Length: 167
Image (spheres, one colour):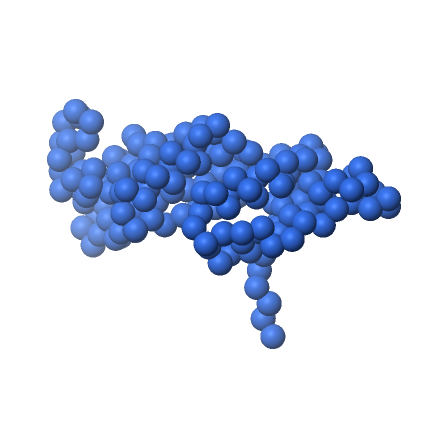
């Protein structure tokens, strides 16, 4: 029997705060359980060791493991958004206290990397005309938060942010 794969995220003491924040960002989310450290340690007895939470049906576990293993961009969580309004909303919530990155990437206030992408972006980059795909890709490299309309316009050869149209 195949069991679900549950990502385990290592935090430096703020797994509960992070889980509460993520549950406030995503619909249909909840904290499932919190397990505290016992006298056996290694954390202080009675403090949260793990926090199991669910974000719109996807389970995660946050562990308060300490500062040994900080988050890096080597792993990220991707959100595929239905439209630009949803991209804008998730981008605003997740960058609050965090930082914007290039090409639709960001780091939230806990250091977790996210990719916030519009539905349909893959179609633009998989265009059978390699010139259209290349123009869209070049436009994406100049973006932080992704804009699907601008990517499509760039594929069509329109200027992006005042730049001359791509050849």
